[in-house]
Structure formats: C-alpha cells, structure tokens
Length: 354
Image (cartoon, rainbow, N blue to C red; front, side, top):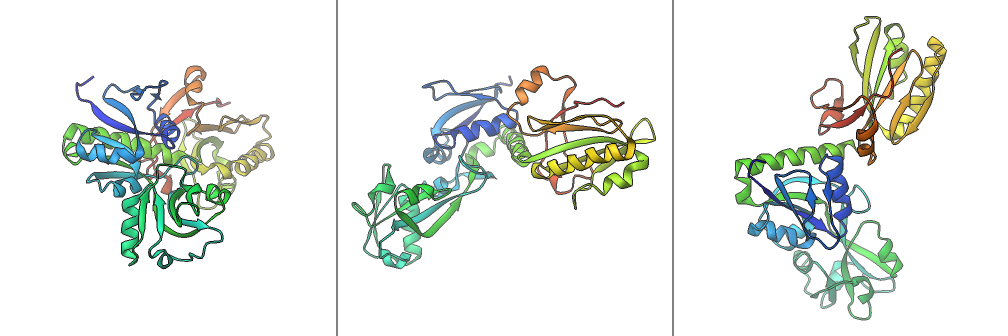
C-alpha cells in the first residue's frame, strides 16, 4: 500500500447492485456487509462509502469524497461544481439512460407544459423541474416529494415529475407521460481539487479505464481459432459482414491463428457454420458446447477457443480452469471499432491443437 487513499462514493439504492457488478467485471471485488455503509474492496488504495446517489455529487463537490458515481440528473439537481470524468451508461434495469418525465392522470386535461401554469407538481427534483418550467415560461408550485410520488396525482397534486426507465410503474398507476425533462446517465465524478492531485487523478483514470473496458465487453465475445492456411479463404467468408479477424502465423507455417470480437447474438450462427465447415472441409471429429458464455469447441483439426468477456462465473473459472490467462486486447490490430474502450478480457483456452 502506497499510503495514498482515494475516497470513493458508491451509490446506495437502485444503482447499488449494478455498480457492484460493474466493478466486479472490471476486476474490483466490492463486498457489502449487512447494515454497513463502508464496503470492502480488494484494492488497498480505495476506500468506499455507500451513499445515496442523490447526495454523492454534493459530498464530492464539498471534498468529503474524492470521487463517486452518480447520475447527471443529481449533479444538476444539487448544482454541484464537480469534474465529470466519464459517462458510464448503465442503470438498474438496462444499459440505457433513465428519463425524468412529466406525468399526469390518464383523464387529465393537461396536454403540454403550457397547461401547467398555476398547477401543483410533486417531484424529487425540485431544482430541475423549476428550471425546466422557467425555460418554458411557466410558473407553477413545485413541491418536494419524499416518495411514492406516483400515487399523489390527482388527489394531492395536478402532475408529477418522476424518473423512469420503462414507464411500467407510471402505467400501473394510471398515469401518462406528457413530456420529457431530461435523459440521465451515470457519471464518474471527481472533486475539482482532488482532480489536481496527480496520484488521485492517475488512480481514477486507471479505474475509469477498467470500468469502461468492462462495459464495452458486455454482450461481446472474443473468439480464437487455429485453422489450416489452405482453408483460410473459405473460412474468412463465414465471418459476419464487417467482422474480419486478425490473422497471424503459427510455428507450423501451414496453420494460422484467427482472432475476432463478435456480439453474442452473432455467435450462435457463426459457430454453427464454422463447426459445419470443419467437418465438410477437413473431416474432423469434435464437439460443440456453449457454457457460461464461453465457447467450448473442439472440431479437429480446427480449434476454436473462447474469451469469457463479462460472465459473473469468471471467479469460478479463475479457481478451476487450466490455462486461464488475462489477455490485454488494447492496441491489437484488426479489432476495428471494438478496439476503442475494450482493454481487458478474461481469456480461457479450453482446447488444444491436435
């Protein structure tokens, strides 16, 4: 341990589980004990604290925390003067942004923001709502809601401003969306003074790099295949359009290694076609399995191995799989657009060359 420590705010609540999983995929294991607000992390240079996302921006701005993860919405709501290091587009349900929307009962006469003049609105984001109304030239009474905002219209208020990902909760409470105030994604932020500290900034940059790499890997699989050079032209035609592999020679000059990054949704058809090609071209014997989002593929003499890019079972593989190795893909030729932001994968060689 260097003696330097980065004080990091982890969002408690709806983003908590998704954040812990993201850190785990990036190689940082966070453990949260029951009733504790100070999670442990397997990095002695980071000190974590669980805080509501609504408050993190304020504590970072005040210097209580060096850095933290919170939504762009809460940065604006708190009018927090912080440095935004990077967007991290993830949420509790999906990999997309959340929306703050104006919603009213289905039978309400309110059809646009202009109809809110003189009305009463309940919301958790009073500043955001007030600023939005002002931008639209509307004056209304905006009150803070402590929770259960959906049930307040129409009995207590005329409209609400609420956050949503799917809109299902609003529909369940007989509300319809009139307008969207803003879309928000998670941001990694730093205290401006802390960002001038060379050690802290370097620590954050490395951490963000790993988090972005883990996010870029979601939904993608790295595949490696050894194949006879004489069959290369035929095999290349099997690859999906625009997904050409990196090709390198092996010690046996009659064989080549092919590496490619594919979306998981493309893997099923691709592996089936490669498997068929291995039989029809070289008459191999083998088996095909898909387990834990890694590829087991042993058609002889073609050999296809899989990179486990984001599976939660990676820790189990680390304990038991032979030939496991960390593979850094940054800067490798032939990865195309995937090279941007993909920095680390867990690679597992399940097969051996014949």
